[in-house]
Image (cartoon, rainbow, N blue to C red; front, side, top):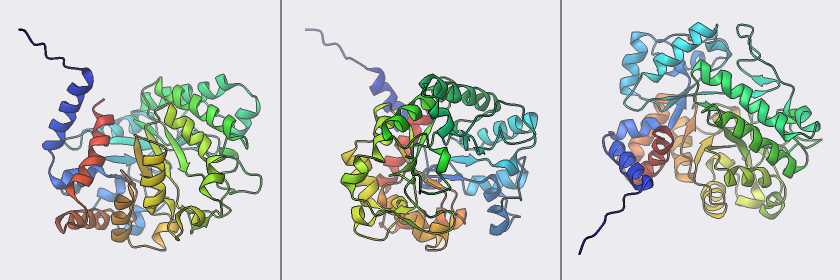
Length: 366
């Protein structure tokens, strides 16, 4: 009798990911859980300078490469301060990609409208778009696809991997001015459909998109860049409104969902922001909504977190809550070391770290 071994593409991919995962040290695994400023690996800069909106590095130095070996990171996010032209940016991204065993991803916020690090930078000649709310007013989903396709094309040419877009929040007339017209619509069905089209346009150019800011930031009246925001809605209420666009993203395999620092006390029964909430991230997003992609926090140096938690505590809480990637902690080294200590003390299992790293490698080695 002859037996045939059926080897699927999926099983081969699993083997490849597990093989790469097994080669990583604990420190290298921990590093994969962070997206940081390039400035965070320059030992000559103070923490204030690292988190400054004006102190920006535009090239790698030998000191930065050396520091990265001790504190490797899974990715870098670039802002206006890092951009001075096409040639500079392409070289910078290429050099950042060359760091580490696992190629770091390069991230950017390029939604269109007022949040567009490239299009709103005088050193770049690329198409500019109206705020997404105005795009959606034309009631043509092809326009949303064209936004994603156009942005995806120039981001790909410049060497980026991930765009923190589209904004999948629902527009609220009396909501948060930080979101405002960044959201597509007050109709969650329209907001979700438009966001999916932007996602598809990005993906057509091999740029990975991200739905944000789960479980919804539109109804929050405070700016979490400065302090906590609170939304007094039940889970049933947001399932029928703010969650609808995220469900559409999940149905279309959105690779990243960014989590807000907004507290939903009627859902969690506590004062924790969504970014640190096991209830919202693991019980709701991961288990109930069956999201299989990567969960990333909003910036952890934002006031909502930085004013209320130290970096060590916040990093450990985020991973325990179900976060896969921590975005720009105020003090990267402190946050990194806190996770290493938590694993060595048994506070967080290495298996828990492996789960997130596996998801990350699944995307990076795709």
